[in-house]
Image (cartoon, rainbow, N blue to C red; front, side, top):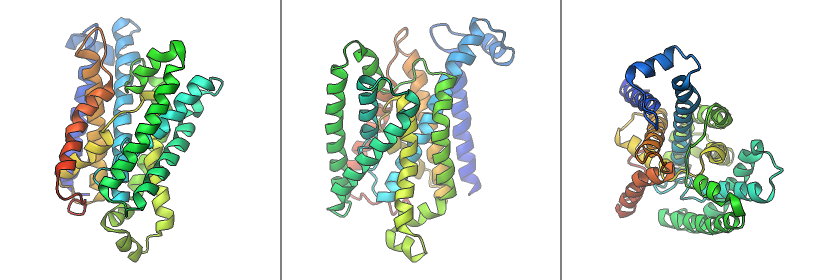
Amino acid sequence: MAGRTRLQALLILCITLGVIMMGAALGSKALAPSALLHALFHPDGHIDSILVWRIRIPRSLAAMLAGCGLALSGYVMQVLTRNPLAAPELTGVTAGAVTPIVFCFVYLPWISSVYYPFVGLAGGLAAAFVTFSLAGRSNGQSLHLALGGITVSLFLGALTTWIILSSGPQVPSLLFWISGGFQGRSWPQLLFMLPWVLLAVCGLFASHRVLRLMAISDKAAAGMGVNLRFWQPFLLLLAILPVAGITPVGGPLAFVGLAAPHIARLLKPAEAGGELLLTAALGALMVTLADVIGRTVALPQELPVGILTALVGGPVFIWLVQRRDFSLGSHL
């Protein structure tokens, strides 16, 4: 991996850590730099230490982890389809994970939330299968994939809305969750997401050479000995794992998986491993920054993180649709 790419990723990571420290100081009770440093390095159980170590830092770390996982998910989906419009929310994967989780929460409350990632994984895989089947009839063309994914997402979104409206007193909490956010999230929720994201990250970085070949073409990958019947579903599974683990905690976060890979490619990394690293770092920065802004800009209220990430990802989506060339070959 090129030294320039590592330096860029390190710089992005340092900025993200700076945002986390800024978020630890900001809130309904702002902390002066001296009070923040004391709470960080000499926690004493007082209110400042509780705010920093039990509320603000674990929440920001959860947002950072979620951004990393969602960005990598979008990257893999774009590589598998060689389609710049592919992302968890635009291929129906996010909606496929959300709908069964909401259904279980409302109608099957006896199912423990520990099993929600498995429910989301099954729903995401099913939604991806339907979307890719629809696009496959048109050889996976970009607009057909986007239309298929949007259709699946709209259908499942309508179903989710109907379930939420029938849930009675649970409507406000479900509506806030479905907007995407990390309000009230702490160490248990961070540890809940960690194995799902970590498994995907390790699997993808170990498979970066295969991703590089598949980004060129299926024929090129097969010519180099890649078993497509194994690697295509395996990589799709790795792409959906983070969505399944993140969605029960942070809800659906729009456009992170779409925007982060394209921003990473603008930095021109030397190889697929570098693209993965930059994509993960940029996704982490995007969601962490959005979470800090969302909980501080409208005090004492909070803005859902999903709204803020959409403000970034929406213009990227429009820019991609306006481009004449939808191929990723020049970037990958």
